[in-house]
Image (cartoon, rainbow, N blue to C red):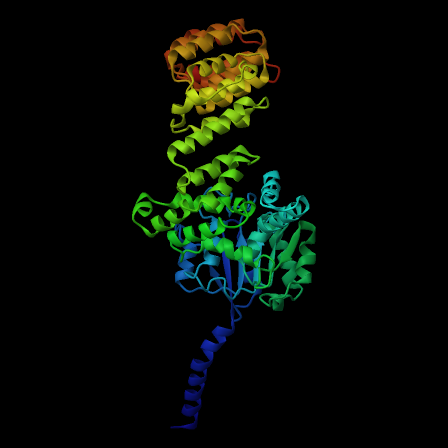
Length: 552
C-alpha cells in the first residue's frame, strides 16, 4: 500500500473514531416554543453548530409532544421555554393558530417520574421567557383554622403560630418554588419576577449579550452577571433547583408521591393514608393533591382492586377520621369545608346520608348567620347541582330574624324551595341593589324556563319606578335569551313609556338577544324610531336592533 493510501486510511479511521466524541462533547439546547420564537432564533444565531445542537421539543399537531421527546431519549443541557405564563398554571400562546401549551402539572410529572429519566437529568441552565415565571409571591397561604388545629393538637399558641409560618413557607407554591422543584438540581434557572419583555424586546437584549462574547457562559452551570445586568430593568432573576440538602427537598418528595406516574392508584392512596397521620394542618395544605387521588378512584378499583384494601384500612382509621372531620367543621372557608367533606365521603368516612347531614349542618349554620351574601348563595346552588341535597330541604331552618332576607330565601331556593324561588324572583325588581344581585346570581344557577314566571317578571319590570332598577332587571332578562312572544310584547309596550335612554337601550338589549322573529317587525321598527330618546353619545344598540329587524 502506498504512503498516500496509508495516510488516507488513517485519516478516515481518525474521523470515524473522533466524530462520535465530537458530537458527545457538544451541548444540546432544547427549546419549547409555544409563543415567541425570537429568543430561540438569537441563541441559534450565535451558538456554533459544532458546539451546540438544537432540538425543538414542540411537535405541532401532536398533543403528547413532551412525552414523545422522552421516548426519543432527548437529553437537554440547556432549556429555553417561551410562552405566556400569567396564571402560573401553564405556558401558552396568544396566537389563534397555536394550540400547543405546556401545563406545569405535566412538567411536574416528567420531573418526578422515571418514565422520562433523561430529559431534564443533565440540565445546567434553564431560561423561562414568560411573565412571573420566577415570581416568589406565594400562590396560597394558611388561614386561621391552621393555627387553631395546631393548638387543639397540643401546641402552644406561640408554637402554633411558628409552625403555621413554616407551613406557609413550605406549601406556599409560588411560581419560583414550583420551578425549583421541577428543575431539581439545576444550578441556573433564569426567569422573571414580574412582567417579562415581549419576544422581540427579549431578543434585542439577548443580541447585545451574545455580541459581548458571552457564548462560553451558556451551559456552564454558572449564573451570568452580564445577562442579569442587561435584563435587570425588566425583572429578570435567577435561582437554582432544589438539591438534596435543600430545605424544600422533603416537600418535593411529597409532591412527587402524587405526580410520579410509576405509582399505581393504590400506592398513591397508601401515601395519602400515611399523610393523614400527620398534623391535620399539613394535611389541609395537601388538599388539592388528596382530592385528585380520591376523585381518580374507579368503582371497579373500590370493589375488587388493590385500592379496595387500602380504602378499607383508611375507613377503619377512626383517629384520622375524627381529626379530619373536626378540622373540616372548623374551616374558615366553607368551600374548604365542602371539599374536605367530599374527600371524607370518597374515602369511606362518610356514607351518602352522613355526607348530606354534614352539608345540611353547614347550611343551617349559614342560615342562622346574619352575614350571608353572594358567596354563600353561590356555594349552596353549586352544592345541589345534581339535585341530591334537595331531599334534605325539610331539615333546613331559617331563624325568624333572618326570614325576610333574600339571601336566605335564595339558599332555600337553591335546594328546591318553591317559596324561596318566588321570593328571589320578586327581588329581581327590587329597589335594593344587593337583592337584585342575589337574584341575578341565583338565576345564573337556576334560570327561568317557565313561561308564566317570565310573563310575571316582564309585567313587574314594566311597572317599576326608577330607571336604574329597571335597567338591572332588564339586563338579567337579556341573559335569558327570551323566546316567549307575550313577554317580548310586554317589553315593547314599555319602550315608548320609558323616560330614560338607558332603559330603552336595556329593552333593545333584551330584544336583540331574543327570538324577535315572533314580533311584528314593521310595527316594532316604527315604535323604535318614533319613540326613541336622543342618544347622548351617538349610535347605540337601538340602531343595531333596527338594522337587524330591517334585514331579517
